[in-house]
Length: 79
Image 1 (spheres, rainbow, N blue to C red):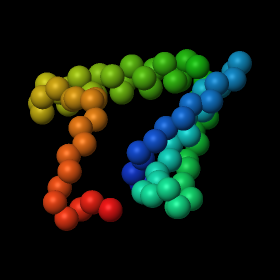
Image 2: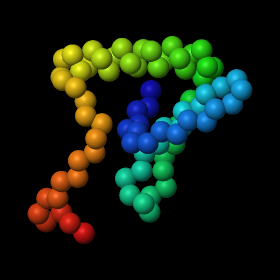
Image 3: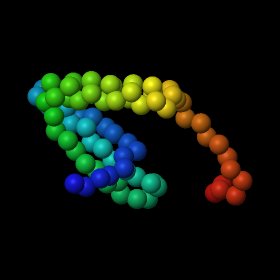
Image 4: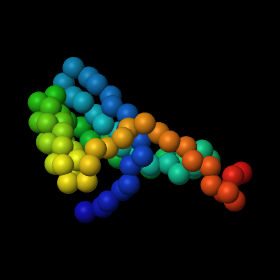
């Protein structure tokens, strides 16, 4: 089984499928690596429910996840 880190997801929707396109891109000049997964709407909903349950359990153990981005400048790392 291959593993890929994802830092972006786009979802295509058709009458019969939902297609999440998971991708990773570390800089603007790099071509993104993309993995697409085609799922029925029913399978997508079941997957979403499972994912929500796992996130809730994660937060129970490690604390709430903050979705607000914080940018911190670190000396020596500026462009």
